Image (cartoon, rainbow, N blue to C red; front, side, top):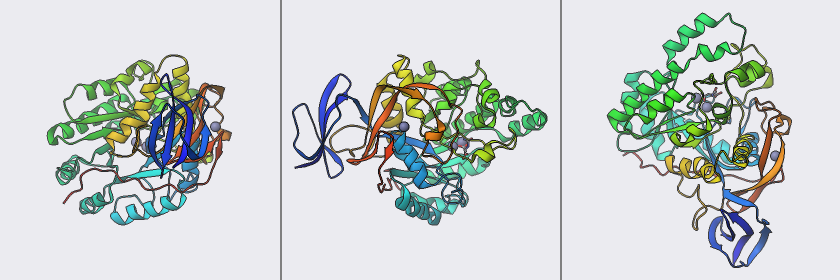
Length: 425
Ligand code: NCD
Ligand code: ZN
Ligand code: ZN
Ligand code: ZN
């Protein structure tokens, strides 16, 4: 007997019933299914539960900005069932001890499944962290010297664990920022960290991937030229875009001030990435980077960078779909299939028997305006405030359990998702 049947689900043009047993997809069938519990989806579209490969849930250390409870509720509200949390917490997730601690905290508080990226301080921790199955090791090019990257890749050799990069060249940033520090127009932030800084750091990262033939993942690509660089090299590299780098531009800094401040910054029209460029990009990740409103109200130089996106990403992408600018299959690929593949989340990212029964159900006709006061995130602001959207997630299901329905969140306990990269000996 099945635990749950989802009746009348739309997958492409087909209407199917999906049977769930022990949290996994047990059956996909056109004929009716018998189960302990049945939910009639009434022909709405079903996608695999979305995976956000880049979020900052800020715990431990910055709980006043966000925590695993509020952040995971925001994720469920936005249609996500798995998040990969970034290591720039306090303390950093750069030792096996801190990594285990974070698993413990998140296991208690997260309502959705989660994996973790690790960072690196002491090289000898790398081999202690890999048995804990991190999604990747993350590097800020601003803080990591080249000889260290070489050492890291020598240690990681044979593991295929991706090295994830934030690419901005520190020298260019330093020089340009110093020149502009007295400007008060928020748009000058974009010039303080120009595209060339990203291109130089990306070229550097690509050289490492090329030389060591090791998989790297480039976070939040902000400019067309950076994309062209990535595409020009034969190396195992994947890349990511955020909704703000896709949909906003430098002028939005003028409109929204530091609310639109992020690293790398938003770009002028000539440099900005557009929907047409998505064919060159592997995944969309939110880079959910919440801060307090008080912090974001400081001037453009003092306010911290980062935009909270978990609750707007899918709505914005569904709007592109409604306007026939982006296929639903592409959304599914970039927010479920590919992130599962890159970070090796074996049971996630596809609607197929044997996979985790993670789903998001979409009403493609539901319209509204983005309103940050409706967020479950602690960060009640967004540069997308007031943006009209067409299409929204109406139900999120994690391993067969409804965790969001019509904007209401239901309590749940998420689990740690191991990445099945080969472990180092
Ligand atoms: C991120 C943050 O606030 O942690 N900020 C940002 O502007 N993207 C850090 C990061 O991802 O670079
Ligand atoms: Zn970054
Ligand atoms: Zn980030
Ligand atoms: Zn909602």
